Length: 211
Image (cartoon, rainbow, N blue to C red; front, top):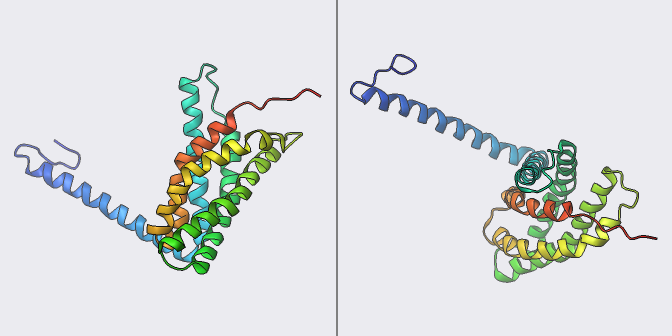
């Protein structure tokens, strides 16, 4: 006997039950997808900000969970750190990239090889250096560090090289195949992997130079 009085004597009622549940899930997914598309059209900046905050939080917590399980130190989860990462990721990256990608799509129209490579080069060598610097400086400020530039100085080039290796192929896919209204969402999704790399680099200890 199943919930709702279904019997499984001949298996037919079981099939009806699971079909009903599957239809309910499909309807819920369809409604969520419709809401998502509507939200992207009517509130693109807010929607992309929520996406970035969600993915940054998830990536940072997954990185912390991994460290808690496998790192020798077994550090406890740091929700404040996750909050700082989410705050920087959502307020710095989401609105900046939304308007940046709109500018690139207007300036370099189409998906020809020349247009795609121009967009990728502009993104990686003009915008990325600024965003990476902003990431370390803003987080250093939120963490209350005396020298907010020290971590930037020691980790910037390592982060920049890792960024290029990850994002150049990723952005070629973005500008060549992803619809303009989904660019920030695509980047946020790929960022789940990238932020784990970024958080790993950021978590490495800074060498304090003696005066």
